[in-house]
Image (cartoon, rainbow, N blue to C red):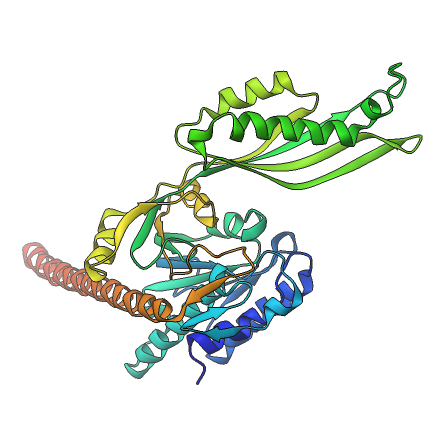
Amino acid sequence: MMDIIDLTCELVRFKTMHSKPDEIRRCAAYIEQYLKRLGVSCNRFGYGNSPAVLALPQSKKTPVLLMSHMDVVDAPERFFSPVIQDGKLYGRGCFDDKYAVALSLILFKNHLQRLRKQGRGQQDLPFGILMTGDEEIGGFNGAKKILREIEADFCIVLDGGGIEKIVVKEKGVVSVTLFTCIKPDSGDARRFERNALEILKRDIDKWAVYFVKSAPEHRHRKIICRSIQPLTYHQGIPDTAQAQLEIWYTRTDDVERMFSSMQGDLHSKITIDHVEPIFDGESPEHLKWLLDISKKTRIGFEDGANDSQFLSRFGIKGVVWGADGDRSQHTLDEHVSIESIYELYGLLDNFIKRCESKARMCQDGEKEKNETDILECKRHSSRCSKGFF
C-alpha cells in the first residue's frame, strides 16, 4: 500500500509547471483516479483550463476543508526525479506543495476506510479536500472560483507555516494591469522613447523602487511581474504594450494612496483587476483544538501569499499550516523533512477525529431533541383529541 512519501514521490514526477499545462492536467487526472479507485465521489474542475480536484462529505458542504496545490514553479528536468537523503525528500514541489496533496489523499482514504468498517460512508466524514492547479499563478481559476461554491466552517491551507507555527495572518494581493500606448507621430525623434515596451519596463522599475526599495522597513512587500508583452506595432516598433503585476502588500500599507501616487509618476495606465484582502481568518474554536493537540505549536505570521487569500472573501475561517522545509520552496535545494510530514499527519488525524466526535455529539443531541419534540407533540395531540371528543 502506498504511503505518504511514496505518493509524494509519484506526484513529484509530474512536471506540473505552467509551461507544461498538459502535465498539470495529467497530475489532476491521476489524483481523480486515485480517489475513484477508492470509491470516492469527487469533482474535477477546469476553470480557465486550470484543473482542480474536490472531494467532500456532502455536495458543496463540509465542516473542515484541507486545501493544497499540485502546480509548481519551473525547474530543470532533473528536479522531477525525487531523492531521499538524510531524512529529507528532495525534488521540485516536494515541499511546495505535493507532500500536502499526498497527505490529504492518504488522510481522506484512511478515515473513509475506518468509517466503512463501521457501516458508515463518505457522507459521515467531517472533512473534505481540495487540490488546485494554479496557486503559483494567483489561484484565480482554482481556489477563488471553487471556494465560492463550497460551504465550509474552517479551512486548513497546507501551504506554509511549520510543525511549530500555525499561520493566522499573511499578506494581501492586488492584481494590476499596466497599459502603455505611444503616438507614432508624436514628433519624438528618439527611437528608444517611442518603444512602448521599453517605457512599460521602466514604469515597472519605477514602481519597484517606490514600493520596495523606498521602504526597507517593509522588506516583505513584493512585486511580481506575471507577464509583459507588446500588443501592437508601428513600423516594427511596439506602440502599445501591457503587463500583469501582483502587488503583495502588508497591513501597514495604504493601498489606495499608493495607486494614486504611482499613477501620477507613470506613463502607463494602471487598472486594478483584483484586490484580495490580507488573510486574517482564524477560528477560535478550531484553532484551540489544533493548539491543544500540538503542544509545541504556536501562532505566527508569514509574509508569503497563497490560496488562503481567498478565504476571507467567502467568509471562511482558517489557518495556514504545514510540514517543515527550511523555507526551501522555489529554490534548487527544495526539500521537506520526512519526519515532519508524518508528525503533521498524526496531528491532523487527531484533529479530524476530534471534529468527528464533535459532529457526532451534535447529531446525537439534535436527534435526542427531535425525538423529545415528537413525543411532546404526540402528548399534546392526545390532550387535544380528548378535549375535542
